[in-house]
Image (tube, rainbow, N blue to C red; front, side):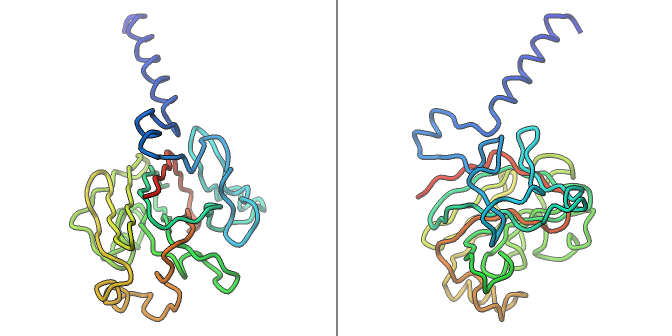
Amino acid sequence: MGALMVAAVLGTTAVKAQKLNTLSAKEKKQGWVLLFDGTSTKGWHTYLKSTASPAWGVADGAIGLNQEAKKNGAPGGDLVTDAEYENYELTYEWKISPGGNSGLIFSVHEDPSLSQTYLSGPEMQVIDDAGHPDGKNPKHNAGELYDLIKAPSRPAKPVGEWNSAKLSKKDGHLTLWLNGVKTAETTMGTPEWDALVAKSKFHDWKEFGKHAKGHIALQDHGDDVWYRNIKIRVL
């Protein structure tokens, strides 16, 4: 490869790197904002804590959970947004470790009586479908509305690659996409929603899916996981 071609490739790579965790002029005009600035955990805290645990670190433009840090004494726990949201579009990218499991949990009601984010918030699954035992369970695959709706296909990329996810929530109406494929659609608070919950593991969880407004959480499920380009637009 010639010197000019090498320079061109390096230049293209640099441009791509600069675009991580940034907003285009068009996105800004449309009302999008960054939930993750690419360099810190500003705007986030560990669930039921005032600050973010150092187990959640930032490197290479991604916010990630480091299990090694937990082994060295850093407390774990789900990371949640400082702010609460009700009607919005959310886009983000995720990458999971081999055999790993995590999730993006939304409409989280933060209350000391609820020890975990998932006791109130539904989850968009993040998982290594092929490498984690839960990947063999229906409604537990990557991109699915966890334990509620089975996706028509498995659009997740191989473990170690970045996946692009989108969640839309407007007046309780939910639509989920993974890598451009719609994986779920339903409306919270309707008879349809109640029927889905009744058939799930959440059927007797009194606070599950009951809060129209809540925090967005990145789950600590005991495995390394990374998130980046987390953007939200309030509707």
